[in-house]
Length: 146
Image (cartoon, rainbow, N blue to C red; front, side, top):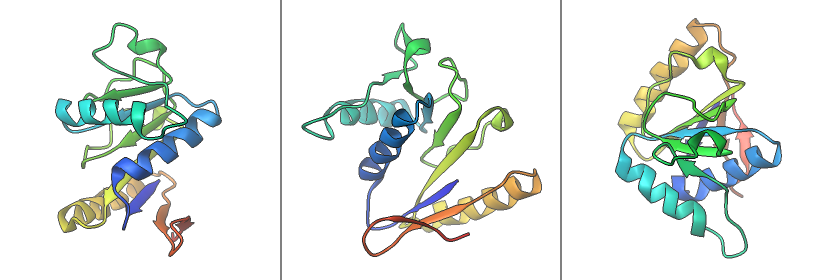
């Protein structure tokens, strides 16, 4: 699933998508490009809403395998996640077929990120994956465009 972020930053979109995943009982891995990004997301997911938080941990935690949401920079899967979110242009992992969903979040304001996402789209289709493209409408709701 390709999510084209427009008019909303990752820090606003990602928690909403993670909430939906947890509500469905899915275990999730979020792979970022740097430890600094993981640390920033770790703090953000505890505080992004006053009335809620997302149960999560990082790959550096001793209880990483028990986390419903795991933040990492690696392509490993210690919590047995079936959904993997890729941010910051992180490549699709070699074990992509082991997941029920791979979600690529694309910064629509970054032309290099959009170009890279187009290449990943073509690669995913060539490998036989069912790919979908989602973009927000004027009200910020996700609409399937392809």
